[in-house]
Length: 105
Image 1 (cartoon, one colour):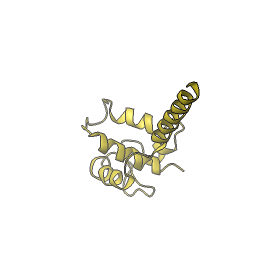
Image 2 (cartoon, rainbow, N blue to C red):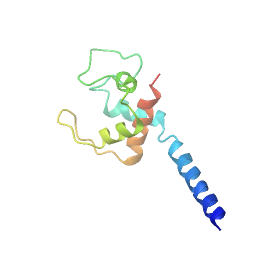
Image 3 (cartoon, rainbow, N blue to C red):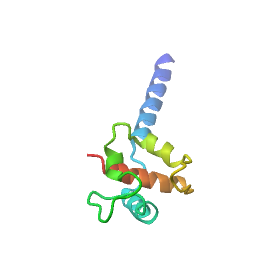
Image 4 (cartoon, rainbow, N blue to C red):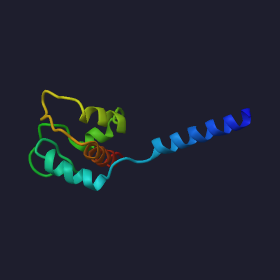
């Protein structure tokens, strides 16, 4: 009986690890959302055009060692004094996070 329990636990752990490894969000949709909502204050592409922006470039955010899917999700769902308080649906935040993470080299 203990072998069966170990097998079930191992299967559950493997499935959980697989679920966490799945990419979240759609980078293309995240780029479109970023163009609409973020580009006024942030350079959102690898080749930004125009004057420097008030907020950090998305490519610089992506390159930070501290930038992870989790850290970006937490950041996007937190209030900030120097940013508009957009109310993002979970899927929208996931898409923006996926887009920023796609800029990581």
